[in-house]
Length: 168
Length: 168
DNA sequence: GACAATAGTGGGTCGGCACCCACTATAGGG
DNA sequence: CCCTATAGTGGGTGCCGACCCACTATTGTC
Image (cartoon, rainbow over all chains, first blue to last red; front, side, top):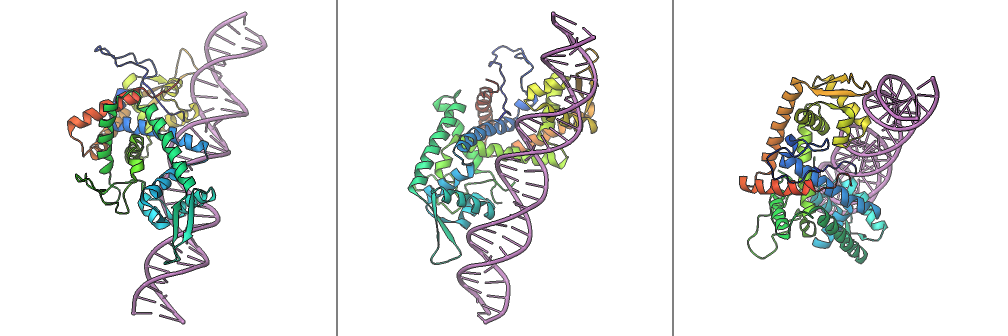
């Protein structure tokens, strides 16, 4: 993940430009909240992805486990709709999770086309560990913010996220 | 860009869970600011990337133009260090920008190994347009926030971004 | 019973991004 | 002058995320 930046420079309470230092990010970009959002988002994503990769997992695996743990068993089609993934890709994710014993798949007796996916205890345990990892990353990245500030950030991001058009 | 989500549900002032609706994002994930950060960041990035793609450009192109416009001419090696890209990849970006007339490349007379890259007027004009696009995206994504809230968000993100370890 | 629609699966494509190596040209120190 | 380090370049690799298509199994409808 060598695509991270940092403006070495301190807050610089004086009015003068804080020493370009040949490493600084251009102000033209720093002005954009979208730039900051994109950058920090990518950093966060990268860090978590890396930790998951160490366990041979990907972000989708965690998402699927979270859905199953929060909302109970799903047919794959339902997972597809909720997570907005390609059905084919979901099949592959479910495949791997099942192979590792984190979920169980069973034909729906009522509609035998459907495959119902359920978290196992191992899956719940794994999810708990992954959440711990995520919290680590979060503490790492949000280190410069106080608890109160983190709460504010969370609320603002929550509102932004809630209004992202998912399916217009 | 079909990888976006949205929790359909309104703020839900009551205590009861706000109707899972088979589309909602699992609370386990929504609890993480890192999740929101990653999601919104990706949405933003995707939207801007799409607009740039329409012009046959990529995010790196904009970044390079911004650096050159803000800090003046750079040897490619300096761009490489500032943007933390692979030298080889930077060569390709500079190549394309030069081919389209957005930058000019000239051998440094003092050190003839170096190639000094400079923005052209066309490049500055293009950058201005790209910034307008970025502002559009920003207004779109941050729509649910008031001006004051956007400022708060920007400051918080700025502090987080400034502390991202770029080169430990 | 034939038929359209749906669920899942396996296989493959495509673009982007990061990365690496080999090579040339130039600079600079001993 | 030789030798090492540096700047740029061209040509690749591998991974990942998103996508698509063809195929089978099953359902519910007429």
